[in-house]
Amino acid sequence: MEDLKLHGSIFSPFTCRVIWALKLKGLNFECIEEDMTNKSDLLLKYNPVYKKIPVLVHGGKPIVESSIILEYIEETWPQNPLLPVDPYEKAVARFWSKFADDKSLTLYGFFVKVGEEQEKAVQEGLEILRNLEEHGLGDKKFFGGETIGLADVGLGWIAFWLDVLEEIVGIKLLEESKFPRLFEWTNNFKEISIIKENLPDRDEMMAIMKSRH
Amino acid sequence: MAEGDVKILGGWASPFVMRPRIALNIKSVGYEILEEKVGVKSDLLIKSNPVYKKIPVLIHGDKPICESLVIVQYIDETWSSGPSILPSDAYDRATARFWAAYIDDKWVPALSGIAKAQGEEAEAEAVKQLLAGTTLLEEAFQKCSKGKAFFGEDSIGYLDIALGSLLGWIRVTELHGLTILDAEKTPGLVGWAENFCADSAVKEVMPETGKLVEFAKMIFAKTKAPPST
Image (cartoon, rainbow over all chains, first blue to last red; front, top):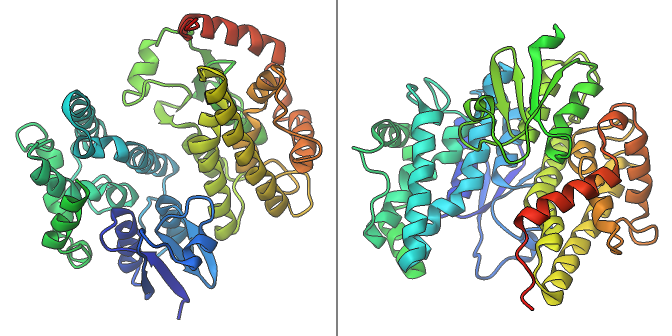
């Protein structure tokens, strides 16, 4: 029995990445809900540099930063792999996983900005989606090929959280007509049972995001 | 693997380009460097890295790999019979990846923030952030090195490459009177820097500080806003 604890919140897409990876690997773990407005002493001890969720604690040792946690999970429990064996394909997966990390704040921009800044954020968001559609996904069903991989898990927030934000703000970025393959990817991604069973309640998510708008 | 099969699209002054070069040197893999001209992106660069259009790009055969630390990991996994670059233990790997990401996400922006800062107050704040980060890196060094010369212990590893590639630019910034690697406050890093620069995988690719100063002058003349007074 692995000694695994995950400090996080189902409402955080970064925590969900880790939940999905752990569940895909068939691992049991304890979920410790963290309130980011009132951070626990344990969280501050485990993640003194960033003070953020998620934190995975394995046998008492903390691992932080969701993408790094995913690689740790992949290397420690190789069953149901999230990364291909071929080093080049691995590099491609890591590139898009990093893209997901580097661009998520920019993509979120249209939700938090107003006026001219919001218009600019919308354009930047569309550029991100264009890159994913044309260079990331191409003709593949998932970024990982026939099955989901590291990059799909990293980009998963686009499949669920993005349209919640779009609805609140009244601006649609991911239109089916503009990004048909990426749009289909969001449907395929949400159909995967592990993902479907481990998404936050949409109404609750709406309420939380509305309060942040 | 024939030398012609491995190319790096890069620039001599870029610390990010230095990273895959050090990694290939560690693996004793020959490569050709295709120097990108400053301010002009070649067709090959745009085709190989359509998303970011940035250096470095490693082209292995006909396959392009982008993002310096992704490239370093690719090199480690492809030429697996050579000395290892990432640690063998999964937890140590996570630690190395954490600090390398910290360097790129927080420390490098703090370093370049000093040069870009407008006014004394902004510059002082940038310096404060950088030095706080350097203290963290000293602590990381003490933990990771386990008393040995490098973050990777006996030999240069992933985290050494991530931070060491910046030493040229660290020296340039120090020429302006700021001590970043301090013999009293960060003694581990001071010793580490010397060992890193003396390593055979690094020596030939680390640019001379003087040349970087000239390069910086040229770049800043193009981009820095004139003084507000």
